[in-house]
Length: 559
Image (cartoon, rainbow, N blue to C red; front, side):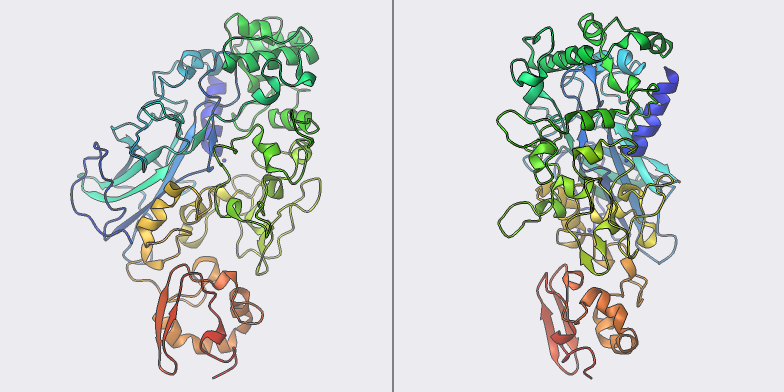
């Protein structure tokens, strides 16, 4: 059992894959009133959640568990002075604590909101004190808790934070907030950040497995009809599982792993022992090996349900163009997990331009034999390449990703392991994590959820990608192509001196400003900008304007 818990801690840590102004006032970190300005003059702190949404089984763990409360917080602290040794990796303390939502609500404890701690020993072979997670970190409270520095990934982290989607007043809130604070060794405030730790219990199976719902899901011995709806659908699932699979062949192996199950999963649960699905089914999310001959958990779930039709629906869950088919089980309809720039994109008729299947493929693709769950994921270059933004990453029904034509907007190869190119582990300009500037997976800046955008607005005065050089540089360096994604410096000096570079590098210019040099989505300004020119006077551009050679010249070759 010790081996399992070590694997859970390590693998969940791996998986769960900027104008603010200055402040010199003391912040004890213990109050939850007005959050102070996000940065001081000398440091910038960026914080993020790694996935954009974490799922938990919810209030009840007495029947079975797929996912425990386990949220991850990452941060990077940047020294603004100079252009080398920018990352602060030691000599400071960085902590997290609960922060009020925009509505003023706090989420400072979890033990009263779920019975997870009552069953942690039976499920994960570890006795946990209330509000302590599987990785040893605490639910955010009014008391600051530490982040530790991870040399491998060049970030500060607090993994396995056990947080639930209920505020202390009992109201559901899928986006509880935390304040992250950086201090020097004597306690002086260096910088602060505020970020959501998104969490949802919307992942459930009640549409089909609650008693007396989907006739095709009826257990052979009938519906359980348990009075507790949170137990009812889970018990029905165990009964249905027992109808199809005899676990007697695995009882000895289960016992060797410390799990003393009865002759069936249903009997085990009603006798008071909850089932951990990932013991038999290999799970990268929980770091379990499973048993030979039993498919991985993600394969079993997606392949089995691909051709299911929901009650009152004519569409199978395998339908390519229906986000609701994913939201039937995953957090979506209420939680709005896919809430970032991609999720907000709309087709001309107002429908979503990008569906879950656009990046992950349909359920058959996700559940196909050999797919490595949590690691075989889409990468940035599948859509962002050759000056284009595609609206689908997959190119066939098997979920094959579009081949990469260039690496300008790319995740790192073989990260975090060979064969995987995961955004949430990739780094770019100045060894910054991609998520630090672009936001979390499923919540790429700007987000439709207001609190996701607070950090960007505080650091640079507008929402969206962290794009202003002054966020991390007291004096932005001058470069023609060493900025983020090979960009040149932005500002008055570039306007004054870009002519010679442009004359000899027109193809490089075209990559962002368009083949006709009339601007593109890649040359849009993130904020309103004003420049002075000798020949054409002052030039003012509103936010979102696609900068073009024709804004000042009669094309790229006009003197």
